[in-house]
Length: 244
Length: 307
Image (cartoon, rainbow over all chains, first blue to last red; front, side):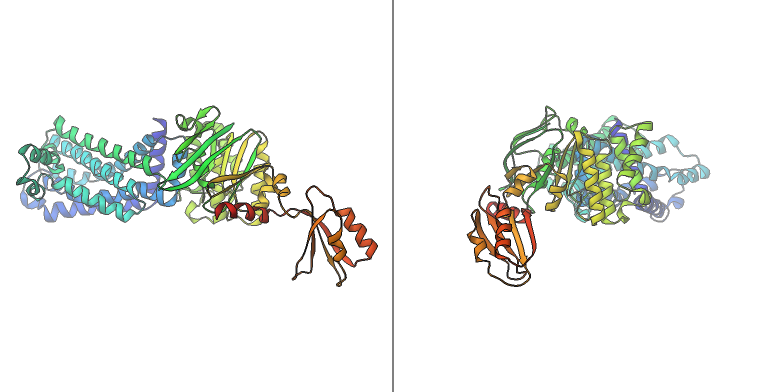
């Protein structure tokens, strides 16, 4: 665990030593505000909840999380520091976990900094704060799944732009896999069990379930398993082609 | 102790390292020589556990690189090619990070960091981002990182690349001071560096080990080893020189007018040459015995392998 913490600290300080974290957090806060108030009609709805805020999170993450994930391995490859990292007595697993947790903390911090919205809604009415907490947790878990996909794509290439595009496409597939865009492709020929399985991969469905205030095991488990699977895939890719 | 047995590395159809075997003992300072792409860096990457061998084995301190890479890496200090580092950190932050990874704590950590900063003279740039440092300073940050935990085995891929002559000298001194009871393996393109710091030379060409002996044994392979070169202030009859017993061949450099006499193997020709000069009153103004020319040996050895 000590090595994970060491890598974590280095990664986190690197986020804040470069403009990455500041730009990310600023843009995240601005965009989530814009979405909530202008597109989500926060005031006009006249309801004391944060649904218009959380509804846009999958779409915000779709572009912002790959942007923060794309550098995680690509930059190491490009600068050659991966050779240093992998020849230090740090295992690949420790490096993957440290890097993931650092970026996930930045995402968590961005979410926490949206607290003025929570204050606003509490000032204006009496929202169900339990639901809001659940939605925050769900949003953070979902961002972790996006991040794990982004890291896996970053492990594939030393080109950050390629890593970004691959991650956005893959994340998009997972966001919409419950909707007709994806399901139509299966409808005509696949048995219903396949369609149900594909639909159950949807980030949207699982997130919306948690955002309603129900922290069910299958939704939380889904995101945790997604994180695990994509991190593991990234680990295998790094071990396999770290020198390329 | 490092034992390398039948080490082979293939990338697809390309074999970068072919069936290389050697072992290195404590106190050895090994210079890896070879043209670009000969397999020096690949061999070093396998020694440090970054690449895994396609065939063969590496045993370091009785541990196999296949099974115990992380344990082995604790006793190795490694400067990868190009001295990569985390550019957004300052040298001080970077060394603190490495110290933590190396398990240094408390006062010992502070002492070691201060020691290496002094050894590679990083004091003036400690708080600048590594990205903004000159090539020479970057290289020194990489060196500092490699020697921070005072490793038993030091593997340096082109440690003096990009340094000015003063810094090169300093790094060589550093290596010499370190190496009394350690294993040091350095790769380099600079041939004099090998005679300056190493007590053992390995030449790798096209993935194969062509030579493994002391620097003086390498010099002995040179055609110029113990050859006598002389220069005359005005032209005179030199045909007699080539006829001297023990002289195998004579070569006249048309540009400089220098005459080089090559001895037969094991022959000592200096006294015969000086006698001849005195007897014939040749107007010699320069005369010296060659030590052997490394660049020529290097070319001969790596060309036949690389062709």
